Length: 372
Image 1 (tube, one colour):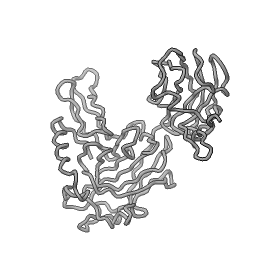
Image 2 (tube, helix red, strand yellow):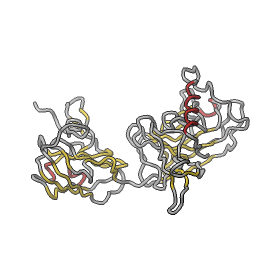
Image 3 (tube, helix red, strand yellow):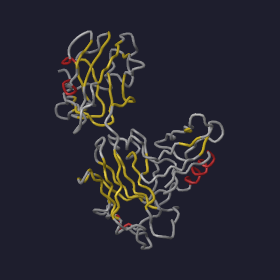
Image 4 (cartoon, helix red, strand yellow):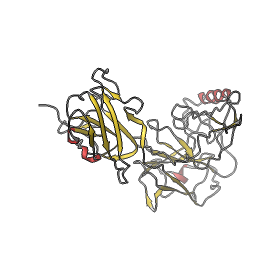
């Protein structure tokens, strides 16, 4: 299915049309009856698993680029929906020497592969139909999908997921692809982050699917859809300090993020990432914590880090960083995967720099027990 691009006034009209749906007793009230023919699969969406997603992506394995024409002055690119509140890239792709080009289709699968979304959201797979389906043909009484109807495979191994039938939504229009996703849909959410650089298969058994009039699915066969995840890599968006501004305060933590989980030590042992101190005003690798997001242990009241996380923090085993220039080298290993090339990190600690903020050690404390 193609993404529909509209002029800005069209977006306002769509939003206004949604207002009348608020407060309905049924989530299908107000929905169009749908086509008269048999139910048809129109989208295979892979997207953030919910409003707490961190990447803000939504792609459609069935999407075909409509090649919407644009230019830099008059015919601008305006997509009719947002993704987690953010509009898709409005860039008009104009070939060198030309004055017109085409808009970027936000639903196309990136050349780098499906993003690795982790944390509480993980990934949702939505098999979107063009009409509401008969409940008993797809769902159990608890609204989970019938056994075998929708499966995610890594090779021949099923991936742990939760499933549900979402009767709401439109297959063609949305105000936000994550907050008000395309529907109605058979939904499958992964319980953990997917493995990087890996091919997965979505298996749909449509043999028993029918609409509320009893019509069988247009294609009642067992269908498969393949996709590949992006390669494991460091994330520049999750790095502090940055190469352009390599200065921190004496109470900041150094942070480095990745698109997949890395192996860490629950106690902050720096050997988990093979930390090497190349240059520093003091100490060796053993004098620094390297850790993920810590939590308090209910029994000991000590702070304990995870054995894997998407981000590492570095802080000295001192109250503050001694001022001066630092250079670290470290090597991270993707959980269950391969190691990245050694990362070289250079920064400066300025004791006169203002303290506090999102990177303060008070908000990112290292593992340890409270002083007695």
